Length: 376
Image (cartoon, rainbow, N blue to C red; front, top):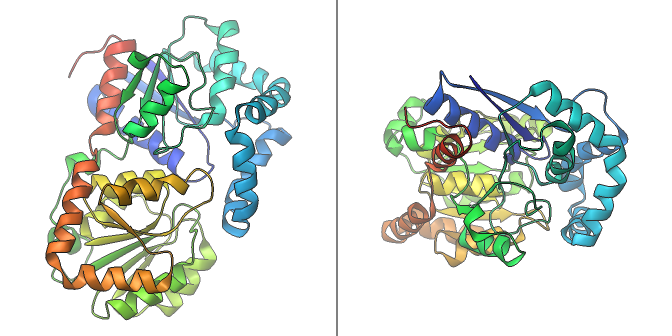
């Protein structure tokens, strides 16, 4: 039985989603040959002040995005990032070494950039030959942590990301363009919109919008829902509030008969299959899921820093539109509702960009390349 350790952190929902997608892919492809353990590297054992700082990601991005932009741009610079790594290493490295020694993995897979320098520095004292891979969970911007040297394999979600990895000195043959590792059910279960709506207890014939604010429920979701209802008065509107319980309670109390309000969901693939159009913040994993579902995307917000380039990438490819301002959002929704040809063109562009089987592709590479496993 091979042991795989997937290292993530609960900063946002994308890293967790990617870790779960990879774990499901390992189970699907190598059920009887691989045991997968997912570890939140910053919630493992007694926590130091450095680990507690990661708890601030959600509150800062929700309540003070301008502050997050400053933090991000400091971390985006190699010098700033390395200074933080040096300061945090004395407290965190012993814990990471202990984690590796206890887990005794045959392969380590990291889906979080802040974990990468710690893993590389901890490996020599535990198992110098331990193979490690980075599975990138952003879309176009490559943080210094993502491209930290010392891993045997790096995945890239887009051509611009692949180019940035290589431009910063990583060997091209170690950086593989795979797309984002979304839930394998995007590849294995592809119901029609009508069938997906029926499965969810919705009217299969009604135009359906899905509003997603990410794991933290970021963005002016209440305003977005009001504009969506004005633009499409007869549409079904599904709203995912993530971990934002206050938003969930407020919208649930205001919901009309054609609206469904959800908290943090585990079946986003099914909700996206039911939708005609997805209104979302520009989080990379949500974008990857929307593209994997082949749906037009309207961007209603983004977190300054790592999400700024995501929307531009999708819009330039013709798979999405900007809807940051209420007037622009309403205009796009009215056109998408009234013009099936326009909607079909965006749907086609989204399907071209989408990689629904990315997690399966990544796991096959890891299984054959590092674990000696062939196809089942």
